[in-house]
Image 1: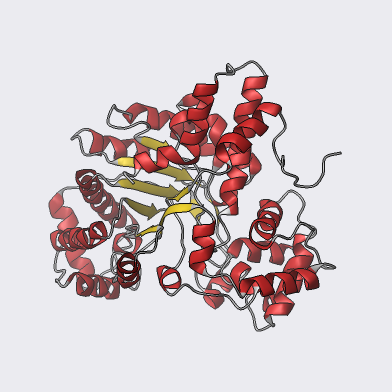
Image 2: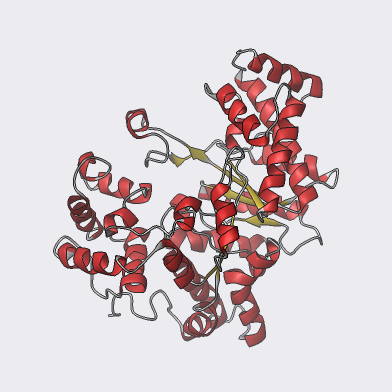
Length: 463
């Protein structure tokens, strides 16, 4: 019987151990998609206790606690931080097979030096140990100590970017770069859309009277993002749809929305198509990469959404993705030579092979893996999900050109997920070598592992 999470955790062959310990383990991290707060980074936030670090905004943990029958007051309610931590420890102690079990113990080991097991019985000692060590820890120390070279936060075009400016001015060694996330600009059917347009116009110091004005203002905000090192955009969609329309129709849809009329579902599809195409062309011109996240159904439990708002742990995998429309959207940009580097993520693992084959249609000599299949996302960033995503990519494309893992997290401790990913990667590649499916070519293996863990993302984003 193997020891629990020893130094060779998840590494089942001698080749895997070699690849991880000699190549992957100490590489820097390029975290090209996260939800960390730039304000907390600038202010170098310190946390009073481990509950604030772990449970403050982590809907992964909230979902698991609810599944364990924990009352909401111990999750997002008015219970004390100590009580919430106790309930989390009791839940984690039974979370066999869940990636949170591994992530949490990696974080306890890497950041707090705790080698034991967290459960209801050990919660008290872990609480005291972590809280004592947190007195000498801060947001920037946690980032730098994790060997992070660059991280990309997620930011609305209407954001002032004041905290990014301050971080850039005070010389933090880690690059903290904004990511352009214009989801609200695309949500023409949303009740608060006109209010959002006003805040967007104010951020740009301009006015938005028509569709062309909207595109112009978004380009002005891209200038501000670009000046602070932005190299990537992001779009969170239920599905990628493609509904082309004449420019005059798009102008009319926008004009009527400005007058207070809510568009039909088909009109909203046409508007989003037109705006996404305009944005994609601009990303290509600037050399930015475009991330597209799809295959999700958000806010399923309205009871929870109404009480807590979005990102409360009530989203799920969706099945509305149209691969045909995704291909048509990419083709519309590709036909005119305006398809940017693009990273595709589906929350539905059934889309893996389809994504790979669509990507292969549009790859060019502009970049290694110009189109990327993003790492196992959200409900797929567990061991099996990562293996399936990387195996699918290897089967249909080039695993060696993959830009690797991201945290997609609001927690400063989440960099342990990169170690988790790297161990799984090395075990997968090591198994192929030891099965005789790939030669024991040291030079090639080193290039593959270092590329996927770090070098490919650095090159892809021009960092």
